[in-house]
Image 1: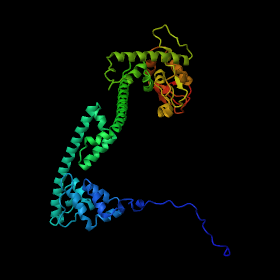
Image 2 (image 1 turned 135 degrees about the vertical axis):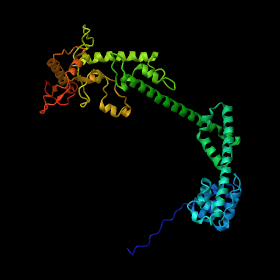
Image 3 (image 1 turned 180 degrees about the vertical axis):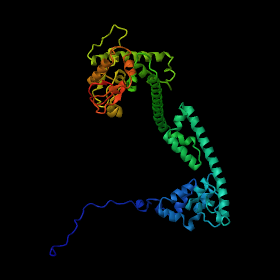
Image 4 (image 1 turned 45 degrees about the vertical axis):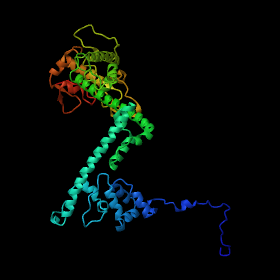
Length: 436
């Protein structure tokens, strides 16, 4: 390897791009600006707080501005403050005292900051305490000027909005004006007409967006209020349902056409329409009656009867309202045995856990989702035979409950005795009951 000639880089035929002379001397950042030019730039800052922000941008600027030879920059910023000259620092402090250690901001927020936890040194800190009071007075003047600047800016913007027929609240809520108002308060310089005229087209576009957001927000609030009113009406129905009417689930109740019409109504609230003595409430009850009638026909088919089944006896219950009308959900194994009212109010567990999942709405209530609960039907019929009570009677349930705690489970070795309502809900496939 040592016998090989040294490697030479290939000579490029492309000439390097010439760099303009102005680019060679142009400063890339404030760190490269000469001190005299930097001082002239910083003289245009509105408040000492802005000078403090520049001082904190880099270590180079911090060391430069805090150097003892550059105290005049802080003095000029303190004297030129729009709210009036900032109080002179104590005799034993430098000009950059208010900014370098952030006493300016802390003193304005809390006039007693410089005297906190220093009661033992109160005599030595008397100048600082006096200075804190001066800062408090300066703070009051600053806040007063902030209010005047904000009031002046708002009056101008309201006049512009009225002149062009814009909603003042939407106009003031545009992002551009929000930033301008914040900057005006920080610099204590009110917004002028010349500041608004060049950006009117941009403000018009932002105003359209703000109006659309406001309308969407108002619509969403109305929707939530309507849902709350509908839920309150539903709870009243559950608490005291009308006669011969079963109450479906809340999701099914919201699907009624009258409820959907109320939900879509452009009004702040629909509680007045849902009063029990109102006309619309009568329409809601009529919708519930029609839904109950359809549910009876559908579950009658599940029990093996026709949709138009009827019993001419006025003493007999409808087939789905009898004690031996028991149902099970095809999809919910843990739902247990359900009577007619329980089947109408049933909501599948997997549906209620994640309603509207993947953008799909819950399926409407359907009688085809239920099957006969043969075990519960056998238990009910056996209990009625043992108690010598006809199943079709309207008072059959009351008479079975009147038997008391005398029903014995044939599955449990201990021979547990229970009321009839508990017997039907037994989860295990127990043998037929025994009347103890």
